[in-house]
Image 1: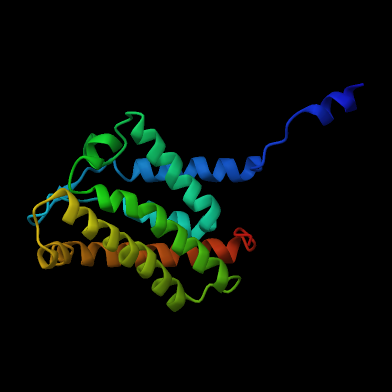
Image 2 (image 1 turned 45 degrees about the vertical axis):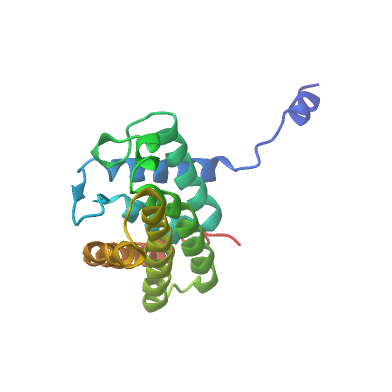
Length: 194
């Protein structure tokens, strides 16, 4: 009788181990917002460490779990938790100039995770850097620039060039994420499954 009851229980589509990893990376993204934010330039978009968490989520967890971690984090901010740097919520961020960057986290982590799965199990550092830069800078900046055009009165060129002050810090995040991901994938091969 006990076996029959067990077979009737709905099974989770996401294994418990994956749920734990998703929760850990959502918490990591939140923790990286604790140091606060620095607003530079004229766009009103802050520099934060949270994009490092987004890049790491894709590079370490892959597209499925990495995207899930970012979506969990964003969902928590949308219900009003002040987890974004500077104590902002998702709703306040979406109303401001950083809306596009925040939205860009989702396709950014997806691209990083999808391409990272293709270079495993070796994880060549040069390809890891390129992938992290494509998703963590290219994709996020594309969405961020579009968001600036919608949320501010900046022209196209001004919106594009407003990304300049962020490049050195974001390049450092790309490097850190690639080094960490290489170490993780060496220690835990098979962490990302196709």
